[in-house]
Amino acid sequence: MNHTAKKVTVGSFTFDSQKEANFYLKFIKNSGYKHEIHPSFLIKDKVALGGVNLSRISYTPDFVIFDNYGKIKHVYDVKTSINTQFGADTAAKLRFNLFARKYGVPVEVVVPRANDFKMKIYGLTKNVNTRHERTNRKGKQIVEFYDVMQSIDYDVTDFIGI
Image 1 (spheres, rainbow, N blue to C red):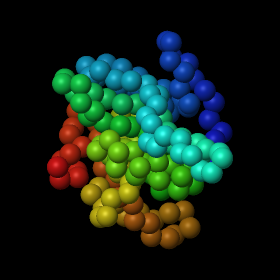
Image 2: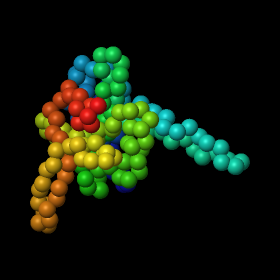
Image 3: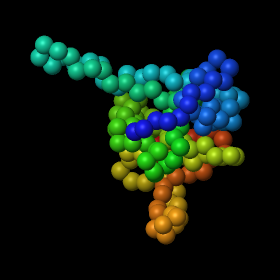
Image 4: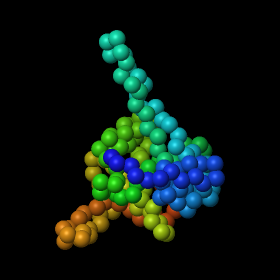
């Protein structure tokens, strides 16, 4: 995937894009929840293969939000689109899936907008997000699955049925 966004610094944090910084300022910073920015999670440690090693697999989400008991509440990955080439590529979707399998929490892909954000969970066997239909500029009918949120104060387990 071609990443063209410029890094943005807010306070002592450096974000990968202006959208990511805006999401932090609008929805995370003053949410009242403990959070981490760009934490790294080990998915699979390095493995010996003959006389060499296969490198480790890790995932670094943009934001992790914790509930009042220290349990992961949300894992957010900020993108510029839900379903276009600027959204999550195949490698990212695979990392989201592997992370959810290991840590038992889905990765929520978010697209910040002026007053809310789109949220989609990839990799499930059925769509749990709301169906949205639209017509693109070329007149083609597009179906997308996402939900619109106005804060991070929701329970992701309501979407996946835990």
